[in-house]
Length: 155
Image (cartoon, rainbow, N blue to C red; front, top):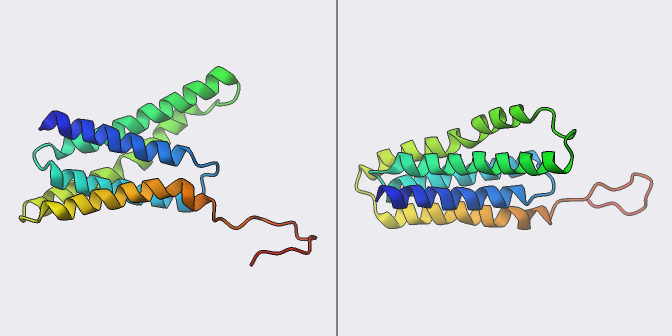
């Protein structure tokens, strides 16, 4: 049970991080939706694995750090002068990647003690994964910044 919870956390966290890293721009809206997806997936996993909820949540956080580390390594291997502040990226992801799934895990664990249906937690997990799936698709609908001198304006 504990191994399947950790594996589920690794897979879902990896999927969400991969979807977020596919974005070409990292606007505030993308980060908030990514954090919402982490919260919902943390809720769902904690409800589905109440005895091993911490392993699932920490698996999600671990895969984010591995993803950030891989991105930094690939950037540094292409251009060694590009990322002088790479240690700050790890500190930033410490504050971005751990609180949302951890809060979701704690809330999901507390709710699971109340005899809530497993379908509720499956729907929370599906909602979080759906948000993650829609992140790259929603980027296509951003309004472009137009040249103020052009005659075509998008309002």
